[in-house]
Picture 1 (cartoon, rainbow, N blue to C red):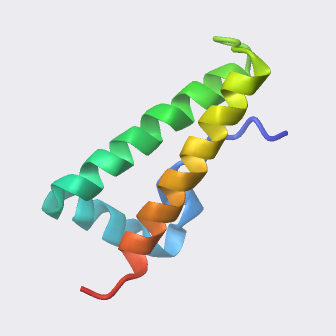
Picture 2 (tube, helix red, strand yellow):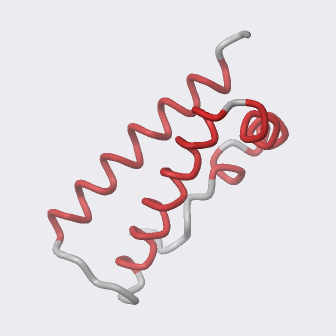
Picture 3 (cartoon, rainbow, N blue to C red):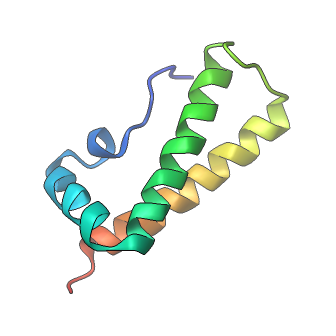
Length: 80
């Protein structure tokens, strides 16, 4: 298990500029990115035992992060 945060700009380095642009131009995208960021922080705090949580709860957070990441990637790669 990695204890490295999965920040969006690190997950999609080739799309970092588009991430920044969409955060400013698209309120829905900005909300998804903020939700991803918050869940990602919670997972990282659990992994590093800063704020430990039960294993099933951490697994559920990972599923939520994955679904958000998929939706964000779709929005980043779908032509306007």
